[in-house]
Amino acid sequence: MEQSNKTTFRNPWAWIPTLYFAEGIPYVIAMSVSVIMYKRMGISNADIALYTSWLYLPWVIKPLWSPVVDLLKTKRYWIVTMQLIIGAALACVAFTIPMPNFFQITIAILWLMAFSGATHDIAADGFYMLALDAGTQAEFVGIRSTFYRIAMLSGQGVLVIIAGYFETHGGIAFAWSVTFFIVAALFLSLFVYHRFVLPYPVVDTPKIGNQTANFLPEFFKTFGSFFSKEGILLTLAFMLLYRFNESQLVKLITPFLLDTVEKGGLGLSTTQVGVVYGTFGVIGLMLGGITGGIAIAKKGLRFWLFPMMIIIHFPDLVYIFLSQTQPDNFPLVCALVGMEQFTYGFGFTAYMMYMIKVSDGEHKTAHYAICTGIMAMGMMIPGMFAGKLQEWLGYQTFFMSVLVSLVPALLVVSQLKIDPEFGKKNKAVKA
Image (cartoon, rainbow, N blue to C red):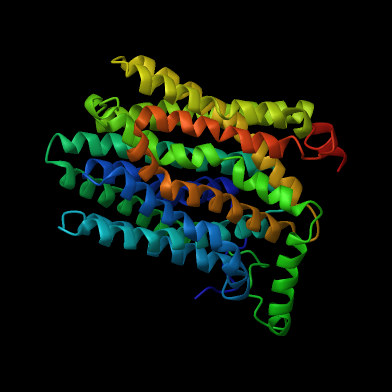
C-alpha cells in the first residue's frame, strides 16, 4: 500500500535511466527479438510477419485505456505492477519455448507482455511529468530517450549475441529459453529496484473522486477534438504512410540476414545478426536521431520534411543491393546496416516532430497518445502481410516493391502545410 509519508522526491538520476530502460525492453522483445527467435526456431516468414505484427496492437489501442491509468490507482502503482507482470510473462516464455506447440503459447504470452508494456508506457510517461517540474523534465528528456535506445541496443544486440552463444553450446530451443530467463531475471530485478526507489510524488493520486461523473463525456470530447482538427484526413494519411516502407522491412530484415544464400538471404549466424543489426544498426539509429534533431532545430520542420522523407527510404536501396549481390563480407554488411539505420534515424525525426505539431493544444498529452496509436497501426497492418508478400516475390523483388511505397507518401508530404518557424530552436525558446 502506498503511504503519504513516503519519500516524495528522489534524485532523477536514481530512477529515470532505469525506468526508461525498462520501458524499451518489452517493445524490442515484441518487435525485434521475437522475430529472430521464431526464425531460428523454424517458423515461416509469413507466420512470423503476421503473428508478430499482432503484437503491435496494444500500442495501437493504448489511447483507449490510458484514461483508466489516470482514474484508477497511482502511476507508481501501475509502473511496478506492470513490471512484475512483464517479468513473469518473460519467464513463462522461457518455460514454454521447449514445448512442441511453443509458437502458439509464446505468441499468447508475448501479447500479454505487450499489453502490459503499453500500459507501462502510459504510466511511466505520466509519472515522469508528475514527479518532475517543467525545467527538470526538459533537462532529462534526452536522458530518457538515450536509455530507451540503450534498451533497444541491449535487446537487438546483447540478447541476440547471448542466444547465439548458447545455440552453439546446447541447441536453439535451449539457447532462447536461457536468453528469456536472463531477461526475465533482469526485469524482475528492475521491478524490485523501482518498488523501493521510485518516489511518491504528492500529485500522483488517483482521480476517481469527483471527476467520475464527467469521465465519459470528457473522454469522447478529447477524441472528438483530435479528429476535428483542420486537415485531419491529410494528417492521418501522413502518419499511416510515412513509415509504410519500414513496416514491411522491419519484419523481413532479420529473416533475410539469417536465411541461407540458397534461399536468397545472407546466411549470417545468430551472433552475427546480434552484432550487425543490434550494435552497428542501433548505434547508427541513435546518431541519426541526434543529427536529425539538430538539423530541424536549425532549419525547422518545413525545410527538412521532404528531404527526410527521401532519406528515410535509403534502407530500401541498401537491402536491394544486399539481396542482389549477397556479399560474403561481414564488415561490409555491418557498415551498410549502420548507414541505413543512421538515415532511418535521421528521417524519423521529422515524423516525431510532426506528431508534436499535431498534438499541440488543450489535450496535447491525450492527442500525442492518439498519434502514437495511429503510428503503431501504420506499422502493424502492412507488416502482417509483408511475410506472405516476400515469400511470393522473393527477397530481391520484395525489397524493390518496398521502394515503390515511397510514391504515395511523397504525394501526401507535398500537400502538408507547416509553419516555416515550427521546430526551430529560437522558436521553441520564445514559446
